[in-house]
Image 1: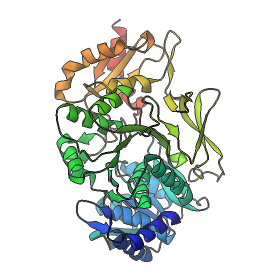
Image 2 (image 1 turned 45 degrees about the vertical axis):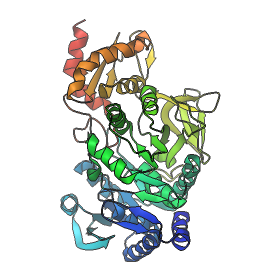
Image 3 (image 1 turned 120 degrees about the horizontal axis):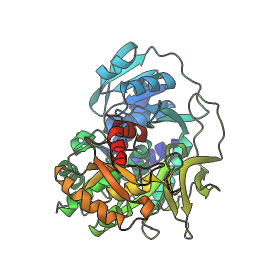
Image 4 (image 1 turned 90 degrees about the vertical axis):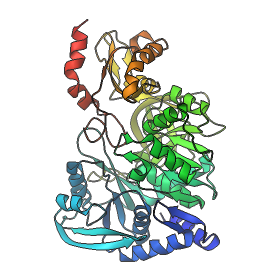
Length: 490
């Protein structure tokens, strides 16, 4: 991470008063940011540091200070269950946890000592744990990012600072990042994409990174979003760039359709983390939202490919970025190479040249990468047709009525969807929206019947992870009686 720290130091000399980092409470220019990174870094004595706190300037400063000090920084997603966090703490061998949620931390670990630290004007708890030494780290590991998954315990993806810097530089070049940009983070900073796109890329390019507490933006948990508050946040900060997951994009599209004003400052909205309906992207573009779909994974240090102005193909996830390479295996699996992780924590170290992603897709004649599904989730219908449920789910969530959807039909003659309506008034629109959608789908992919879910799919109820990836097994188990009843009725 030395290159990013060096860039911050360079801007501290050349543009010392330019705003580098801000949230709803504090703003730091580049000179102040450099000084705070060095001040906090000098206080860090332990080598494996966990961060469990809300988005804000303190999160970003602590992360950068840990890199400055040569520590391994381990984000602790607040959307993890207590059991997942306990696993993370033990697996990573966390020696120190810095948090704005000390009572939660103290319920998870045995503390040897508890002190306080003030970062960017905010007082945080510093909890030294009684944790035994964790697994040995691969050489040069500076970040362990835990993939939440949907089954089993999270796995620690070990990354070097060099790998993250390559993505940072490549992403900045692809989107035309400049010192005039204002980047607004609307994803948890405990996720790797939010680090790369929300902190590192803006600071590497000398622009401003806005990292407000998500609750101040109207975002609560994985699916709780107040549209009015979110749009007010966008209009307040007037960002030029931001990153959204499909759920947030859909909310903005529906709000804009109803006439709510979006900031005219936006020049680039990246969307990813899950499949995005081409229909939703087209609706966003028609409303003047400059949305571009991308693709990445933690094992490749985040972003792999991205659509950008002038090289855009709706329905694809764009061209692979310059720092990486992509090929398609004989069975259709996407294989990524060139900038990979050092292995999962607790497993043998390995120098990886390629990584089989588990995603299936193809490269078109213009070099755009298309994702068609996951190897593990694709199923065959009773008629022998292979179907990737993500395709149909993204089409369903591209309609005006449906916020989330899970498709089932393995070994069956027809498909059933469990759907979450966009709002209380959307129920009446589900039937006509699905009927219209079916007209454009092949017969084996059509949605014949559906069940209205009794609550959104989220990490709290175990039906999705923190960034909205579905836990299909849990959804199938929860609605199994209703699904079987519909199949038996025919």
